[in-house]
Image (cartoon, rainbow, N blue to C red; front, side, top):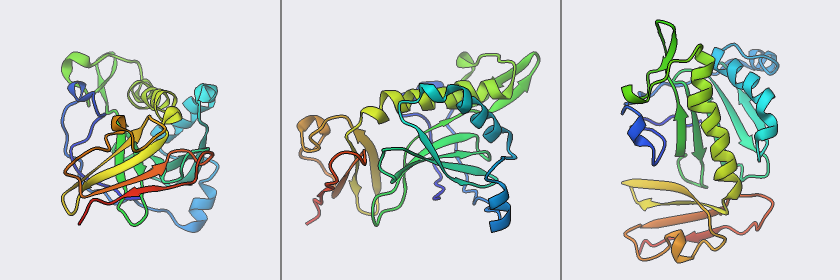
Amino acid sequence: MLLMSGMTGIPGMEGRWKKRQRPYQPPHVVGAKAFAANRISVRRRLHKAFFAWFAVNRHRFAIDLKIEKRVDEWVEVSFVGINPAITAHLSAQVHEMEILVEFPNEDANILLDFWALPMSVLGGYIDDSLLLEYRELLPSRERIWESGIFEPFVEWINGTLAKAYWVELRGKRDYWSDVRLLMTADPGAPEAGNGETADEYRFVMPCRTDTSPRVAHADHEQ
């Protein structure tokens, strides 16, 4: 798992969230015996809340989830039928569900993330990751995580991931990169953004594993 630092938030919805600087926090990976024992249960309250919520709401998912790794601080899941390069990581340290994409020979890139910070107040809890005008008093930490992480996660899976054809990475060498899902069947179509750009590289992979295995690759570097 690659942990990345920087300003984060859900693309297109930054107006609700406070800006934050996420420090690098290396995960504590438990030993082999502890990991084996931990396959059945989890210790962290966020993880317990997610699995309890998922058990009740599993029928709502257009794509089923598969647990890949489960350690003390984070749980990694993949999506059945989706390119295994796309994974989700639920971190108990920073209270977020981070969607990562790993292209061959490239660093992992953040596609998006969902996060919530429960804060105890008189009468219940609020989400401290939100600006004041968007905060709502809820009765428990679990309801905060449900509202800020779990529900947006399933909505993104059903509304975006399940309908995407391709996952694209583009950018400039040693400067920046941007990863996104393409909702058109033709990755070279104008609506896919494959026109004249300043990008030095562009990689495209099929989003689903049950469609074309072809990997499109365009490198604009001279």
